[in-house]
Amino acid sequence: MAQEKVYDDVEVHDMNDMHQTRRGVKVDEDESPVVWKALSILLAMAAIIYDLSPIDAVPDAIPFFGWLDDVGFTLMAALNAYQHFSKDQTSIYVRLAKYVKWMMVALIILAGIVVGGLITALIALLTR
Image 1 (tube, rainbow, N blue to C red):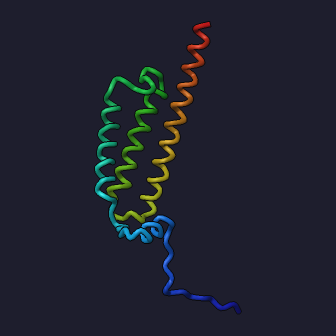
Image 2 (tube, helix red, strand yellow):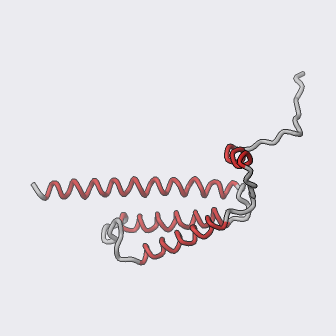
Image 3 (cartoon, one colour):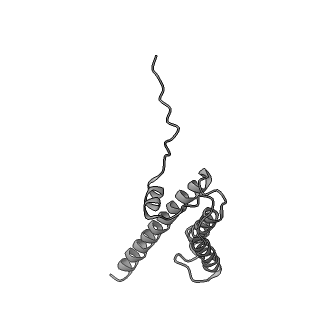
């Protein structure tokens, strides 16, 4: 029968905790820093202004794609605010919000590249 080893005095940290502890920075896992909260509020306000603005990266006249960029920016800002205003920063929901937020950023950048390429191709065809 195999014996199980129990280590009660060992703490497991992720790399960020290890680096912050090494630098002498106290890590508070319950709250996000005030600077990040303020930036998330500014990002949310910018997303609302972008939604209400008639100037868009993708014009709203284009069906589906016109609203997709608005929804993407708003969802990204909402996930960012949830991430930074959550009481328990170690929660699985906060970590999930963080990963989904960065996937949204990647999708928005990818959509911008695709739309830019389509516009460039359309201009090239029309100017021949």
